[in-house]
Length: 302
Length: 293
View 1 (cartoon, rainbow over the protein chains, first blue to last red):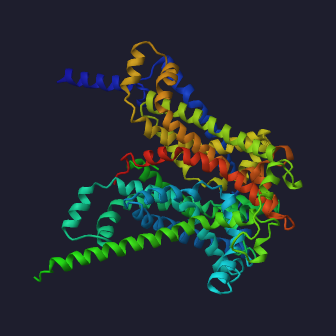
View 2 (view 1 turned 90 degrees about the horizontal axis):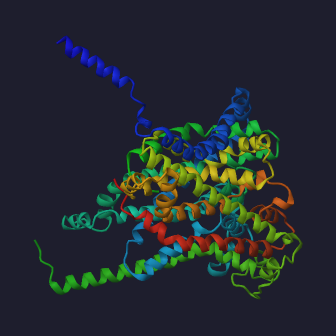
View 3 (view 1 turned 90 degrees about the vertical axis):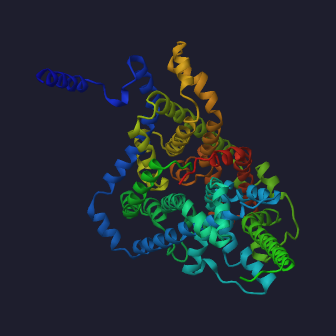
């Protein structure tokens, strides 16, 4: 009995001297090589990501900045606009992409050709695309010319009304990013085995029923991941609100990202600029954590 | 239970198919209009001799001319006098972003996936975490730090920003793709006496080349699409890029619009060409059956 206890204690002691798991099979020069291989990545991460992030938090740590920000009507307006822009835009682009991906499941050469063409908005530089949207939607723009020539209607001044300008930003962003989500959902749909569709058809589920009872439950996780990613990317979107509406009318459609940069460029207050985007953290942190959990636990290629 | 006669069932089926085909055709036309309308608008302005179609209400090019495109190629308008230099700067930023992203992420994914064999969890999570940070939220601290690093107003500052945000994504994709390559290949080479650097250059890199091409080109496209970091970090005329020049052009009310629009259409050609060159890889990567519930 005592012998057994000694042996057990010895085992425990031996186990204590084991090298840590992360270098369990790397010895000597191999470990040095592995460290050398990973060093450029760690270096870039520390110098150009961790350092700016830490510096940003330090810059925005003064509570007086937030008092100043939240007492300004323009900033509160930007918060509301950001919430609407991201809330409507992220959901609209992902939901429409889910619907559109169904169209590309059809057979035929022209559907394949359409799929290739559908990537055009994604491949076009953001600047080219958004400038075009801006010029289409100004009062004398192409959209109003088209409405007048084809339908005989005098169009509104799209960028002079809050909801129309916000809508213009959302439409432009959806136009640009929908191809990516569509492609991801198409991949998801193609990964669903045909047997499931056949079984559903035997049970009488075709068309809309098949979509609701087969496609939606199977793509729910992918849909959730795409919505989270769209939310995060849209929260940090500068190009669309800056180039499509340009904040018009009267800066009311400005969002956190554009307001932050304006504090730097127009007011020379980088600290206020950094603090301005910190208001997105209550949304960003849970979304980021959820996304990491989903991406780590499920095998989803994006 | 009522029995529908065969002829009626067949007729219903035929009508449903016709309605389905008609619906698909209508949707296709609507989609084509939706995708191409902004591009058509650009062409309309670029082909106009004065670039003021916006004020004439034309929806067709009434007197189309390639004058603006020729102007861009020959740097014939005062605003475009450095167009080729700026395009060169844009290419330099794109190419360096592509090269450094491919190099750093392939070295990292080799160390994490092939040497530590998936045990570098903290580092992979750090990559994921960075993936969730909106790029433009960091522009102000990045700008101030570039002053301290002495990199402000250099193309390298923009390259550093692009690489930082492209590498986490590239690392994730390479790690996923790397799992498809049997680890026994590495072990066999090691038994034959190959050093880690030899395994990396002679086995890992050649086998990973399709994935490397995709992440490299993605990095190039990201760099080409990016505007704000270039705008904030670069100021001297010799360092300007096409993206910055276009923005200044657009802000100027007096400019004839056909020139910047023609320039931006030319600027859009390289990413479109690259994208269509790798579209098969993208589709293959996305549809390799790894999307699971």
